[in-house]
Length: 383
Ligand code: SF4
Ligand code: SF4
Image (tube, rainbow, N blue to C red; front, top):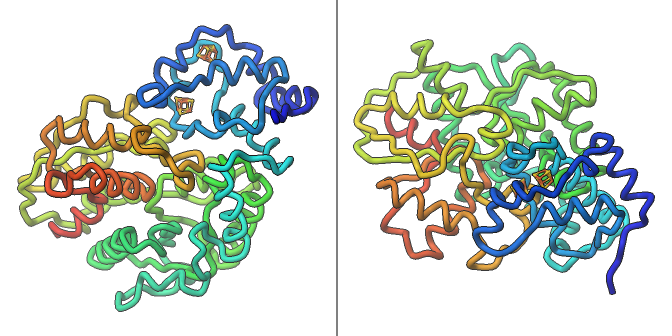
């Protein structure tokens, strides 16, 4: 049976998403032209906006959960409809009603793990710092240069733990006075917020903010563009402002300051994938390219779509926790673009992108053709 959210609530959403944002839509369809979903199946943000304008949103529909919040369509919209904020606001209604299509149900389980253990992976909080076993990594104390905040995937996932370890190794070799907070950290909350669970987001954010303040944290280094975005742009909603640095920015800073020397050859052709939350959402395009260009022997090729036009991996907006059928995965298309530009290595700096690309590489049978690397893994090989 179709469940339609009450008209008044939809109108409240329209107001909350920027006054008349939905109503400004004149149905030009430019959003649908650039949306990556329309390369793999059919999806219409224009239609979602239209339905919301008339209070006719079907909150049980799969369509409400497709948007990866990649940021492509807001760049094109001539009427500033704020598609991402508006779409997330609709998801909040579904969350409050507890009504979800089957593909979204895993996210509800994830909310429990986030509240109980501070991570979406059903892992134990007390194991959060296990990635650092055997490395020289201290607990953060007030006065240290920087807090390193590895996200949930870099803390627990066996593939992504290599990224946290490479990062710690680089920081040590550059003589950076850094520490971690391990079991005291929570997920930043970015993805659960975009998936509509505002209550869980606020809880995670408030706990993290209290931990940072209690420990005298001023500057935070992150591996994930999702943590970067949230700490930098969303935590200020709670009246705090930490200095936030993404690893790609910090690497070029360390190189420019002479603290990090890239001495060894890396004789491969690589391409850089701009993660949506690093590039489009935060304008960080040049720093990672600059790091790669400084590596002796490395050849940097650009994919057909890069920088503002970068193709989303499909992992944003909570989609990393949802099953996307074969044939509908943007990451498969992106691997094809990387191979087409002659790259032997697809480099990026986002745990969701790496998770999706590693999966595509294997399921497409490209294991021998292309490698997937985080930027820290390459830098770690050449210092
Ligand atoms: S933000 Fe990206 S995924 Fe979402 S509707 Fe717009 S183009 Fe499609
Ligand atoms: S691009 Fe903007 S104005 Fe055009 S259909 Fe999409 S939301 Fe409406």
